[in-house]
Amino acid sequence: MITDAVIVGGGPNGLMLACELALAGARPVVLESLPAPSAEPKANGLLGQVVRMVDHRGLYERLSGNPGPPQPNSAYFMFAAMGLDLSLLEESPVYGLPAPQHRIVQVLEERATELGVEIRRGHELLGLSQGDDEVVVDVSAADRAYRLRARHVVGADGAHSVTRKLSGIGFPGITYDRRTTRTAHATVPVEWVDPGTGALTVPGHGTVLPFLPLRTEHGGFAYAPFPGHPPLVSTTEWDRPGTDAPPSLDEMRASVRRVLGADLPLGPPGGEGPHVLRRLKGGNTRVAERFRDRRVFLVGDAAHVYTAGGGPGLNLGLQDAINLGWKLAAAIHGIAPPGLLDSYETERRQAALRMVMYSQAQAALTAPGSDVTALRELFGELLGHRDTVQHLADLTAGSDIRYDMAFPDAHPLVGRFVPEMELRTPGGTVRLAELTRTARPLLLDLTEDASVAGVPAAEGWDRVDIVTARSGPASPAATALLVRPDCYVAWASASPRPDPADLDGLRTAVQKWFRPAEPARSG
Image (cartoon, rainbow, N blue to C red; front, side):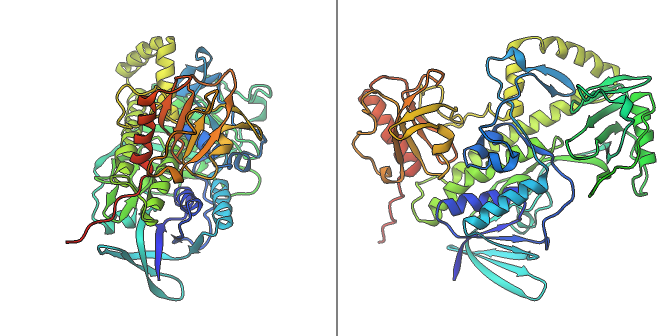
């Protein structure tokens, strides 16, 4: 028996991809080398465009514990430890969803199980070989070794990806060896914390705002009092690598003293663990030579790593999974248009390179030295301009990405993530995000006479869900949209009644993304 897809790695990215494949009717198997989900503290939540994406899959309320749609941060954020005044913007693109990584894994695993995904924990990839029609993978489990045959294999197995190495895909980039980051859960003096704002006042230094990184001439400092957990304190220093001894609170206190120039009494954390106490030397910024090798694909950290991890990293990796899922499912079902699988790398490499730039620019702007301080002073002046704030907020959120849909003079929404809108349908009022939870292509007809929904069919039309509705007053200036399963707009019109050229564009878009490839002719 041949499996539709083997996903190597049962973290957030692998599980999200498994959910996407299952929604599209494919049968993936997830191999995870760990016997149980890791409780090690890693990312503390989701940041940016992916928060809206999980809402479009009906997962936001599960992850946040709050009813209703996500709301953007419209007040304040940071770039390179400098403030972004989001109140300058008409609409902030920066969304946040605080949720520890183990909770994200738990929710995605529950969802994958509901969709019938088979998850094999304690199963490790040892080898793979590709043929014309399948990939054979060698797997080791506690009680046996075995082989699986799959149509495709996806490596979602992290920065040290075995899948990537076995496929012979290079991982070029830069290794930084000057920086050392120290992080610890610890208690701080209660009287130093403002109960209203959560700000920490350190005598001899001043006020440190919660969750907003601080840069000094000697390094970086951050104080993050996550609800229900001891505060998370971290420092970044240059050319102070420490020792090979296990990290300690004494080491953490000394690092804070060097960075802030003042003492911060840190006590051991209370409550149930696991608690963070770690020292990380250096860092890597790398992008795989290719995201695909015939029938093998890479997503998340297996394809790209960079120094600004955590929420932005999951933003990138989870969207890799969502971009690949519907395309891979179409290939599995034999209905992928020509070039569809190749578009995965084209689109997601663009996003990865943007995030590499984001990471490296922040690293340069937070380094020590008077020259960097002067650069920050100039940059700080630029942050008083709305356009600069908008540009950096879009970059932070990943909402600056616009895929090339090959339409000259396209509507401004084409190639971008679909905007949220409230719709009045014959069945009642609904948010657009609620219409995309099946992960199927969607044609949204907002014209007064439903003239788009009645367009003569094109090949691939049977794969598209058609919804006629009226939009609310705050909706964008579009009268019809074709939305891909990953919620990016493939075609749009602003005409009250689209003309023949508009409708030809719609047919072209449907055929480009959803028309099955013609079978190869023999002889």
